Image 1 (cartoon, helix red, strand yellow):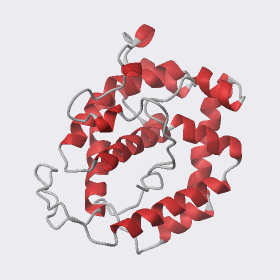
Image 2 (cartoon, helix red, strand yellow):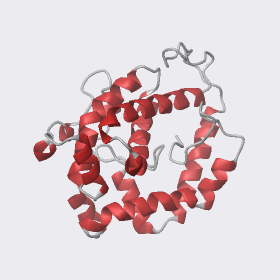
Image 3 (cartoon, one colour):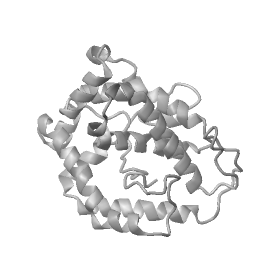
Image 4 (cartoon, one colour):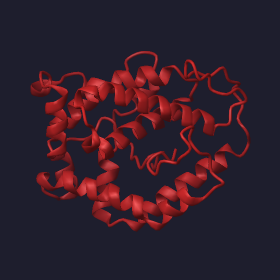
Length: 237
């Protein structure tokens, strides 16, 4: 299943959206293991070198933060799931840009809020976002063309992914799940060395942004823009 942000569903990953009012993370995220005592700086540095345990611990620590932020907005379960997956995928892309890894919770909180607002505004609610709280006092009905906008974004994603080499496309689909599979699982499924997963992921994300399909989509004025005035190539939900 192709979701909002190049996501393929796997077992257990729906817990975050399907149980937003209760348990926010899946059983695979409950224990931090040997990474539990590491600092944010150590985890970010580890994730950037391709250590899948560091990345999984980052997701584990902040999954409840993302879920709590999402609950502040009146989103459908599918929208909530799309928001969470987009946040993790954007973090994957921008992890190396973080100047202060210890500020990671603030980055994730802000990114989640912006994505919630973008998603809510995309639905064209009749009442705007309250700028003081970031919450909606909205009606439940959306305009008929909201499905058309979603179809447009999904088509752009499918076309963009089709332009990627198969090994990059398959890797991005696996690593954008929430929680991500272990690098050992990815290696076994795709037949690539564990040490090459991180670099291949970065090259794939960069190449996706440069595909004709995504560049054309971003240049199209008909779509809905974010409050910041731009459109994110990985926020196509």
